[in-house]
Length: 133
Image (cartoon, rainbow, N blue to C red; front, side, top):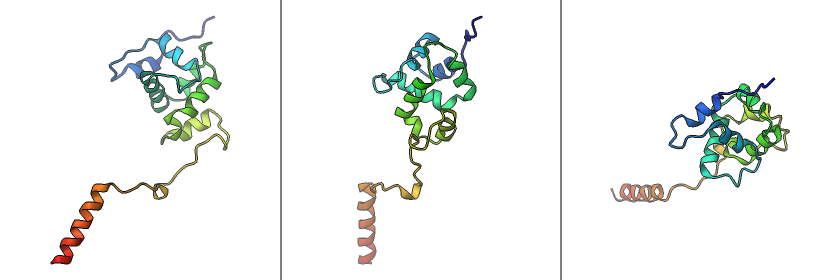
């Protein structure tokens, strides 16, 4: 008996609001290899949509395809931007990542971003003007 779905919700999610349409065999091909770095930009968008919009049920259905393994999906996830995203906790648990594989969470106050140059110029002008008056 063939348990593989003929229509997969992932195909609908991937093709929604997209100029590039993917067939189910193309989507399966994207997830059949764990090599994220060699995927083109459209394939990476498919991957990001999967981790952002799909859930455990979609993950289980994807694993029904012989070409796709949990190891490949895990490798793709760890190499993708999704592993740094706000929805990563659910996927970290679903993919059974151990602590050494998880990306360290960073609180907003810990971010050390340089201030945009334009803001520095504006603040200097304001200080100068307030000193002159």
